[in-house]
Amino acid sequence: MSENKRLVWNEVAPHGAKALFSIHHYITTGTDLPHELIHLVFLRVSQINGCAHCIDLHTRDLLATMSFEKVALVPVWAEVPHLFPDNYRAALAWAEEVTLVSETHASDEAYAAASAAFAPKDLVDLTITIAAMNAFNRLGAPFRLPVKAKA
Picture (cartoon, rainbow, N blue to C red):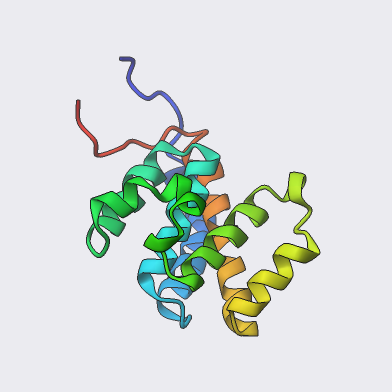
């Protein structure tokens, strides 16, 4: 294995990192979204984007409140609807729709489903959550942030 030779983005641009972490702070302390739901969305977005660091981190976060079996099935959540409550499924569907916006164009059908499941402010906060994790993934993956997982 070669040593990571890429920049440490938050050290190179600390003001940018502070701004992005301010959004994270808002999401985790300034919204009414349940913390488990936030980390579930963080994990699913990171899985779609292929950010190893964020997948590792948010899997660990979720394992504090969710069974291993459920966490392992997050990529196929739609196939196991009995494992996730309605609002979690709505959040996961919206997370996929927004993360893949260049393909989905945030369809009217998806918007209607998300709007039915969340109050207006919660839907905006959920969308901010999705957007923020996409931003973190677009820093974590290209700069190859390390994982805690060991061989």
